[in-house]
Length: 271
Image (tube, rainbow, N blue to C red; front, side):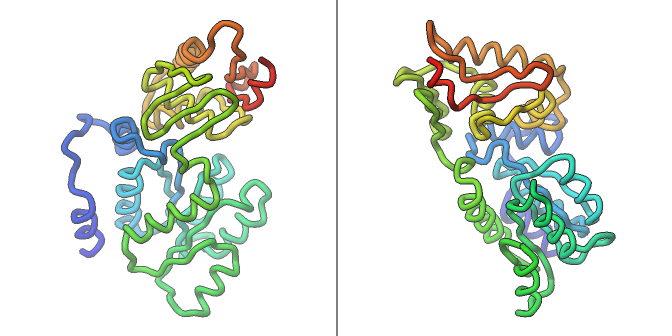
């Protein structure tokens, strides 16, 4: 089968796996080991062909993305109401709500009007491509397609739509995070953060000002299938603050009582 053969050729089984771990936990482990700059970026696959969904999930998670999927358009709409991903891979022909109609609804909602959408379809006629792009899709790829090409298109689209997420360097005030070298500096001085504190700071800096609940931080930093107490987040936020803040230095991590935590990009103005 073409899909299965392509999967084996592109990505042989990893040399080291976490025994008994889920696919999402494997992805978290790979991000930790490889230092992927796609950390915390989420892709929603809306596709009713199970083998293709499996192939796409495998390759996206190998690249460090978090992946959700839905086999029906109406189920995908419910997922989008709960959580907005960074990009949607959307099949044209879906049971329930069609991909074309779902794309229209995505563009009609203020919260998702700029959400990157790549449409996947077997319909390769020029008129179909024009219709798909005219409905609001950012890109259009015809089945069967090359997975490396699709991954390249995803990265290109995210570079345009979310440049901070694919940048190797994040900075605010006197704080600088090097995503490739896994280093953090404040005022030119290197700070020593544990791997979890580094990923937590990176996740918060990617969305300055946005308040994340403990549950959202657990999903984004630890992964969906890691079942630990939400108060663990408080412990790691405390460790992160201790590492970041010296005497008379402003705290860039803001606690929002009853809601969660946010990265305050204006922290240096209060120093």
